[in-house]
Length: 167
Image 1: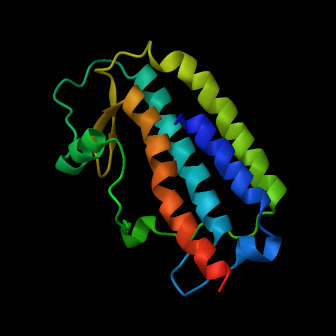
Image 2 (image 1 turned 90 degrees about the vertical axis):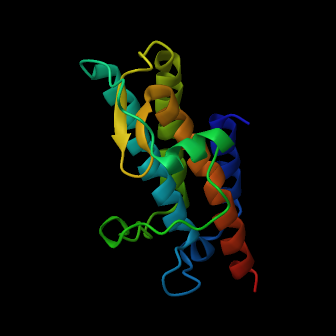
């Protein structure tokens, strides 16, 4: 399934929540559904920033390799079914104040940006890479693909949060 189709599915899911459900934090240290959406949007734009960075890098990074986990991630085509804990300095809780309409608008803007970059990504030299802190050196196509992997990964979290809403 394409990442754009997946984002459309996320938009459909969003329609089902009341504002109270969207912002509900089920347990200490657990995000609300709104925070999960905010995280997905912010990270997707960071990944797309790296797609654009790959297009402007002056020179090839032939020695820039993926980390062992990065190789694993791209070999299996997605994140493994585990919870990933970010280092504390990167683990600031996402925004929990947005209304549904704002999130939908942000998803639409993300999709627009992705459609524009999808037209350009194949023309970017695959040896022009930008470094990811956990996965190593990724080229523009890999950064672009990472957006979809990240959205798929958070489907598990969404289903877990849904279960806590209906208890």
